[in-house]
Image 1 (cartoon, rainbow, N blue to C red):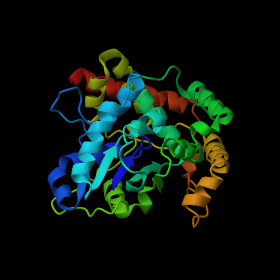
Image 2 (cartoon, rainbow, N blue to C red):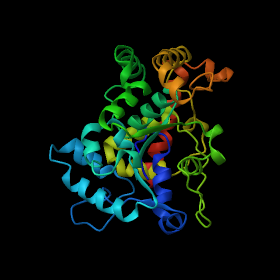
Image 3 (tube, rainbow, N blue to C red):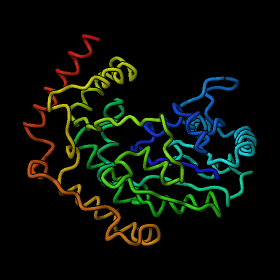
Length: 327
């Protein structure tokens, strides 16, 4: 069986990929093979990437046939077909799925499964904003970006809808079973994406393959925007190195600070109505696709364009710039 893990973005894919690459031998003993086809960083290179992003890069940057990947994938799968084989890249979620399917054309549909984690719409919106901000890739900041993005989603809900994504997968991979999973740490096996994912694809966590369990603290919007300034001025590599240093100041750690409460409620409710059929097909026993968000009293008062938020950005910027000067 070959499992094609396509994301979605911001659902712990890097943690999962790091684990399976680091524990290759232990996982092989319990029946998991992390496919090497599609993980070469360059033609002829012996270095394997952490994920299968090179396939997505190839699709996004070239119109060339997928023949090299198809042949490598088929050959390797034939050698390990008695194991649970895994291909993983969150970039697959938004790439041309028809071209992606060509890389797996020689693997029987009955021997494939396609899976992805579904994250609450508003939580993904927040995580995506902060990732863009940290990488210095926001054309506009704060309210301008949020309002424009929400208007785009309202006009084209398929860009966020799981029902639409499922239909795209079925068109590209006819006959392949789709196995979506919900990204909710409170309901995951051991509260961690690695334990949860391996359990759901039928692989036992091997002895000696300890899972790193970080605190999963969420950087604040102010911190993310401050790191974005470093990314643009000094490069994303330098910014990533600084982000690995955990700052203890509360201004650097915060959730629910991108969308205002009424925006969050609207987004979750609007997209939930677009995914009723998706929920009924894959999660019929749940009262809703996602549990209601329980905001604290402080979070319910959050507004972006206030003196308090501007002060938070100033403080976060000072902390980040001091870190940059010391580096």
